[in-house]
Structure formats: C-alpha cells, structure tokens
Length: 358
Image (tube, rainbow, N blue to C red):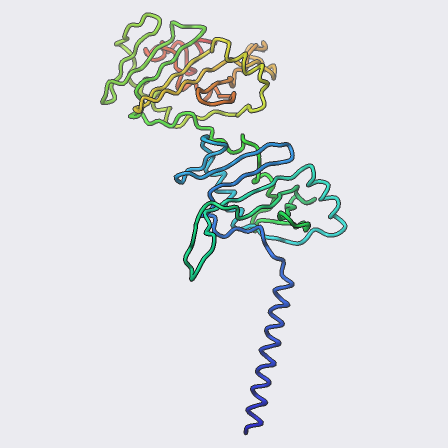
C-alpha cells in the first residue's frame, strides 16, 4: 500500500514537471508582442518624428488632445491611434532574406514613436507610489510589407524587425503613426450656436457697399448695419439673417498649407483681403478670417468656356491666431458671407451669396 502511494506521488510529480516544461516551451515558441499597450487611458502624450524631420507632439490636457502646443487635435484620429496601440499584433519576425532590405528602407522611411503615460515609480501590494508622467514605450514604425497587409516595426534598443498587423484590418499601419502636423490639426474655425454669437461683420474688399455687421440685441433679435453708410437697415429678411447665423455651428477649413513659401505668406498678409469675416462670441472673443482669391491653377473654364483668372472653388485664408495659410471652400463660406443685398431679400443674385462679387 505504501509502495503504491509512493508510486502515485512520484508519477504525479513527474507529470507536473512535464506539464511545466511543456508550458514553458509553448511560451518560448510564442512571439512576444512588446508593441501592444493595454492601458491606453493612462497615455498623456505621444511624440512622433520621422526621417524627414517632421514631428508632432500629441498631448492630453483636461481630456482634450492638443497637437504641437495649444492647437486642438482631431480627436477621432487620436482615438484611432490609441485603438491601434491597444490591439496591434505581431505576425512574424522579418525573414533573414528580407532583413537587410527593410533595414535600408527604415533608415530613410520610418517614424520614431514615444509614448508617455501617468505611471508610478513602483508598486507595493497594488498601491502606486510617486505617480507621474513617464516614458512607457518607444518603437519605430517602418514601411509596409510587399503585400501592403503588414507593417515593419522594431522596438528601441532592439535589432529585431517584426511584421505587425491589426486584426480585422486589411492594410498597413504606417499612416496611423504620421508625424505630419497637418494630419492631426483640427480643421474647425467656428463652432458657435446662434445664442453664442454677439456680432458678425462681413467686409467685401472689392465691393464695400455690400459690407455689413449683424449685432445681437437679445432674444434672437438683431440689428443690421450697412458699413458703407454706417446706418441701420430696418427692412431686412429676418429668415435669411437667421440662416446665415445658423451656419456658424460648424465651419471648417479645407486644407492646411504648412509648406507654403514664406514669401507667399508675407504677400498675402500685405494685400487687401477679398473678404474679411470677424465674429464675436458671448465671451467677447473675436475670430477674424481674411480670405484671398486663389489663382486658377487648373485653368477651369466658366459656363461660356472662357478660362477664369481665379479659382472658383476655393480661396486662401488667414485665421487670426493661426500660423499657417489654409484653403477654404466657397461652398462652405458662401453660407456665412452673404452680401448685404441678399440679406435685404433681393433674389437677383441667385443662390450663390457671392454671385454679386464674381
């Protein structure tokens, strides 16, 4: 009986040892995924810089993401990046035959990513001590694989290259780790409900008799003043005024021109704007947008087949407090820069608010 018990215990011990060895072997055969970040809620800053010396710093303050200082970032793009960090997977190490090729590509086409989070210096019994912003993850994002279904990545201080992917996503991830400022900057210029608007001033440089200012006098009542005569206009179309003000709820620029030559930027600033729009909100903050005609680079003709000298789809614009030139679409800004005659109820200019100026 004793021998039988000893045999059972010995057999059980051997079985346990074999199981432990098997588990360890399984673990050693699994590719370690050092790129994944489970606690994205703790992330406070993401810094990215590429080989072209472009760089962005995304920083969370009061649950709002900013890019390169005080510029509000596109929240949706940041969320996509954080979800990528949470679910990224390693498919396989780069093969020896392809290794040198990808090393050369990463030398000229890669982005360094630094992740900072609110992390403790150490933990004791699950209690955090000396919690502060610390660097928690650094890696390099390289080019896509040949089939464009994977992305070459490597950890800092490691020579190993890996093919990474996102389960359920049929593509590569390089573009999600963009160091281009324009890819992160929020395009919003105005986000004002009617009740938050104190005044709207629209000045037409080439046709000043169409310039005006709308002033709120409370309870959705407004004064309309013609700037050319500095006299109030009493018989204006109330519905059209309210429609114009309603469009300020969400107004965005089209494209950020962060690579425009300084000479061109200075030239715009020195020229008289085609349209100047100044909006004052209830906090007495004034946002001024100066718009300039843009050359017709595509030689787009008018309805008569004649080439127009300026772009009929978009303009250049300078927004006060913003360091870059942007483009804005007539399609968007027509709605918030109606000429005075339109607000007086005249229909001779049709649906386009700038028809009188073109």
